[in-house]
Amino acid sequence: MIRLPATLVLAAVMLLGLVVGSPAHAARPDEPEGDDTGLHLLREAAIAGRTRGYSGTQYVTTWGRSGSGAVSSVLEVRNVPGEGLTVHTQPSGLVQRVDPGTPAGGMSTPSETMLEVLARNYRVVAVGGGRVCGRPARLVHVVRADGTVAARYWLDEAGGPVLRRELLDGHGRVVHAGAFVDLTLAPARKAAAPVPAAGGLDLGETPGLLAQGWRFPAALPGRLELFAAHDASPGYLYLGYSDGLSVVSVFVQPGVLDEERLQGWHARQRNGHTIWIRDSAEQETIWASGGHVYTVFADAPADMVDAAVAALPHEPVPAPDLWTRLGRGADRLLSWVNPFG
Image 1 (cartoon, helix red, strand yellow):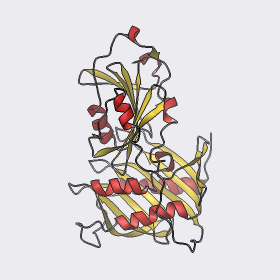
Image 2: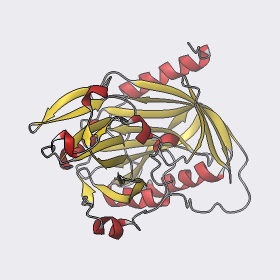
Image 3: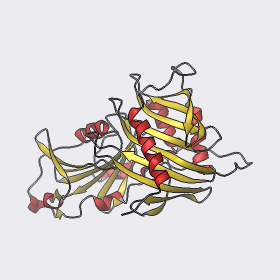
Image 4: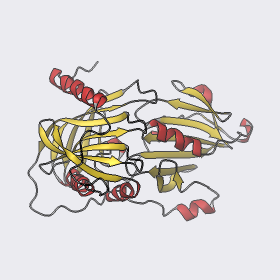
């Protein structure tokens, strides 16, 4: 068992208390809510998250569909401009270099493409200030068309990265939270910071996929737009959807599902068909439909994931002897998910 430093555990507990108790509307806007008064602030923080050197400790928690069963981890992070973000995750001990705008990187540094999608789907409003890990911060809300808050970002006033990010579902509940509990920020470079170039549309293979007979929606419920479609591996189709805040990744493979190997998964009935769910930070769902197996990984609120899954095909499955049974499960697919990277 890995024991974390007592000061870090205390900070994490305090963070969780703030997250659970935070209302959906925490402050009055300092500018009219009809304007995207916070979009430029979020863009500046995203640029800093890629171009400034920093190191620190982050505490990340994701809540499952039921609102309980939280999955938490502590991340030791170090960003070196030109080299990327290195993340050491506890308690797993995994060390990897990731793009900070992907789920593996915490989604706290959106690429320019994601910011464009975000601007089409939401308003980003500056609503005041606060402090995170002892540092002054600007608070911005990402607001839905109905006026509810979809996300909150605390942005470092000293020109650093996003200090804290919360994702809220349609009921105003925090479903994902990540925040620095300590941060060391390197001095800013004198040269002007470039706009973050990482991430973009990856739809060049779409005509070829359609010619092969693949059919897939250009959008899913929740304003999720298709940004990537390609062969992840021979026989697999990868589809990436995003609303600018969250990512829903869909893998499709010909075959039928070997349900006996789904240890730790829970069956649910939907419109007369069975889907299998595993509550985790990735919101995993798998099911068989019309001779294919669909696997969904999502960094998104559960209500958005459920609506996306419901919009994908759910058709009768052919007899098993028509296809080779699948025995690989979903874990192997997870390593391929790298949206906007």
